[in-house]
Length: 172
Length: 318
Image (tube, rainbow over all chains, first blue to last red; front, side, top):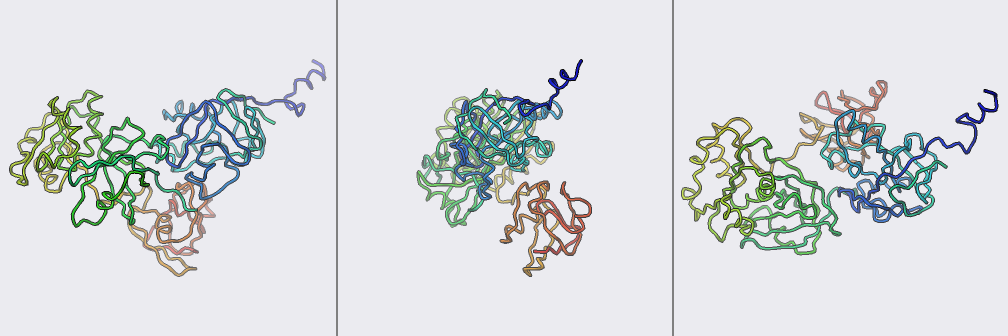
C-alpha cells in the first residue's frame, strides 16, 4: 500500500467526506399541548417559523411560555426507541416521544451547532432536547431517566420545504 | 404568556339525562384526538368562576375524540355543578389529563358494579371494555325512580342482556338493593366496585368487610391528589430577600408551593435534571434528590422541583 492509497481512503481526508447518511422514519405534530401527536406522511417546515399546524409554531405548546427560536423543529432517533425496547423492555412508540421527526442513522447528539439537510429543508441544530416529566404524565410510562442524554435535538429552520417520510438526512 | 396547564376542550353536545342530570360531550376544538384514558378515569374540569371539580369520564375509552361527563345539579352545593349546568354548546372547558383512581382489576373473574344515581358514570366507561374483553360482570344501578335514572339509552341493552339491574327505592333505602345479601358470599375472583352517595358506599364497605383485601373498590372524590415527588411532612420555606414565608404541604413539591404562592421561579423538567430552577439556600438542611448538582454545589444550592427538607425550616435566597 503506498501513501497515496492511504490518503484516498482516510475518513477525514476532505470537506466532502460524508460521515453519516440518515433518513426520515416518521413525522409527527400536534396542534395543542397535552394532545396525542399525530403521525403524518409529510410535514411542512417553514423557515424561521416552525411546522405548519404544530403547537410550537402557534404558541400553543407546553413550553410556549418560554419562547425559543431554536425549537422550530425537533428530532428523535429511532435507535433510542429500539434501545429502550432492547435494553429495558419499554415500548415507546414514535408518536409518543413528542418530537417532530424520527430519524434513522443520524447522530443527533453530535450535531449541536451544525447544519444538515432533510429532504429539501435545511436546519441548524441549536441544542440537545432534554427529557421532561411531562412525557411520563402523558404516556403513563416511567421513561424519564431512560431518556437522559438521548432525548433528541432542537433546531431552527433555515430553508423550508415539505418533508416526507423516507427523505434522506445529510450533513452540510 | 401564561403556561398552558390544561387540555383545551369545547362543549360539542349537551343533553339533559334527567331533570337534574346533564350530559356534556367535550371535544378538541379541531376534533383532534384527546389524551387517552382508561375505564374508570376522571378529569378535573375548570369551570367559570374558578371552580375545579372532578368528574368521571362516562364515554367508551376507545372513542379518542370525546370525553363525556354526566353531572348532577346539587341544590345549595358549592357552585361547581351549577356552573356545569350553565355551560352551553361551543363553550370552552379546560380539563386536566385523565387520571384513574378507580381502575378495573384485570385479574378479576367477575366484576360486581354498584352505582348509586349519578355514580353510574365511571361504570359507563367500564361496561364497553368489559363487554369487549368478554368478562363476567353485573351492573346494579340504584336510583329513586325510573325518571331519576340517567343514561337509560346506555342501560337498556344491558338490561336486555341481563348484564344490569335497576333498583328504584322511591326515596326509602330499605326498599332498594340489599347489598348485605348481594355481597354475603364472595366467590374466588369476585371484585366489587361502588360509586355513589356516602350511605351507599358505607353500606357496601360494611357488607363487604369480610371480602379479601384488594377486591373492594370505591370511587371517592374530594381528596386532594398527591403530587409525585412531594414531601411527606409539611415544612416552611423562608424567603430571605422578600421576607416571606411559604408552607410546603405534605405531598407538595417546594417548587409547586413557591409557584402557588406567586413566587416567580422558573421550572422546566420538574425532575431535578435540567438545572432551570437552581436556587441558593442560606440555612436549613435540604434533602437534595436532584441528579445534576455537584457535591460542592449542594452546600449552596438546591433544586426546588425535587428537593425536600430534613427539618421543619429552610431559608432560601429569594
